[in-house]
Image 1 (cartoon, one colour):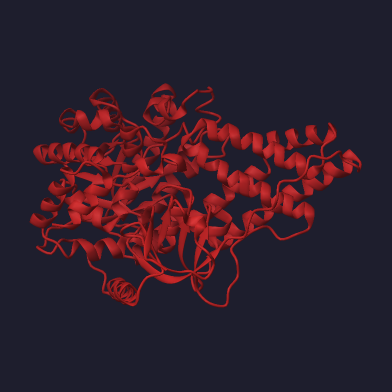
Image 2: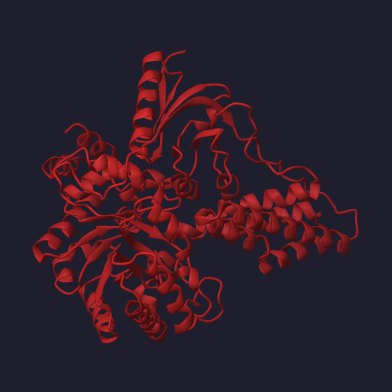
Length: 550
């Protein structure tokens, strides 16, 4: 067979060699037939099935822990959503079978989420998995899931549900290849957390037959089909080199010439701190505070918040910990904060915008952070999300200073902030770049929507040029500019980011070893040259190629 390649968006830099095993087909759509049984019995069966699915997802989450638990808990909540339950019951009472009622109700809700776009559209995939599991339970058959095999394999699927990805047997699953999804989909996020190579958004993935030998090269986003012996040998060499780099003694992040590049971690819960420290985290570049607020009917008290923040800071004595103020709205609506329907929530009242409307919630959070700052010896930095310009920056910095915070900055997620970087850094103590949203807003492409995944690439020269504006402004003001988006976890891109003037990199803990090893191979001069080459490209793929050729 002639050699050929498939391409998608790679996650990480690792490589795998193995044979393909495909996910089984989904459960067929239930037929549209009249219900024969009693409506009450059918309703009871569906209620029991939904409860069983929710319990199973919750149990899987407890077993998986970390980011996977948050994802699976959210899926379990979908199974118990009262609006869905009411819709299903209405359909059954109108004559539908339980299976068909579940299918139709979930499908309607999926379409609504897809129409909303962005993060909400990505949740449609998760909702579809819950529906599949519920229908399987009603039929008394196993839900479709990761196939079993006596030998290791490369898993190929249209997409993967969180319940499947969270508990992958890493002794068997060598890599993931999916037709759908983008670099910030759940498949990509969980693949990074597990340090498993993955390529998402691969056109033609489902044409791969079981047993086909492939090389999955996440660093280039290429799936090499039926590789020859030389290609396999080269891939095996790279796998061995990566294993050696990961097992090397942990050091602080630095370039080959000794230039310091602190490597920090992104965390969503204080419980994740010990594991990050073990992997060599030099601090926290992004602590997401939403875990305290999501699912609550009222804002948590200052005292409860302060206790959580103190626990986090105590895990990093003497080290920098950057905490993001509550980032609500859009994909993270809160009953007590964001109650208005918006046609396009990603461009609506979210982040700092909604906190200004409900300022007491912001004041309480900053007061709690001040208490944690005073109770520990960690170096607390606090930043605001979704900041558009210098006026919003001045508002947040002034409020932070008023409440006694030592270091106050903002996130660069909106292109306007990068354009006005000199004004912003004249006010803020620091800027942290959220490359996921910056890419989304720069290229007008929903960050979770598979159909536009090719646009959601932080290598795009337009995004890199905005980052350079921020890096240059930071250098001129002698203030730090970090990156806490998924881009920092891409080792090759991490080098380019440093060349653009970024001073710290923050990522999922599992990416630390790869990024640390890559940075150590280049000098600042070389990093700057790679950045310049990438800036001159016209496409994301061209930027990757240009940087690699330097």
